[in-house]
Image (cartoon, rainbow, N blue to C red; front, side):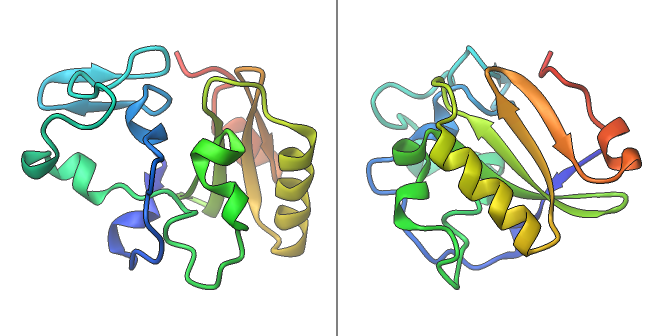
Length: 150
């Protein structure tokens, strides 16, 4: 099982107008309501209707763009601008970067930047392209994950 590394990090950027993590591209249970690709958070309209009282699941998730203290990910990689949500995750063999589409096809410039980042940092990648997941790493890593969300 892969886990989000964000829960122990320091927040370095602001969401601004971005609401991608609430729009139904991620999977989570928010106060008994399932959210998954194709189904936004039950409490999301144009903003979060329970923000002041949101559960720990919401309080503890931050995309890797927000946690990027060295500004490795450019400003245009904010999820609502780039069309992808970046999340560093841990798995049994180390850390990888998950790159999840947010309702539109990943662009060649985003894909190119991600692959260069992975190569430069010797980082395993799990990248969603046209709804299908592609794992980039060794065979054990590739075999650890399904190619679809559901």
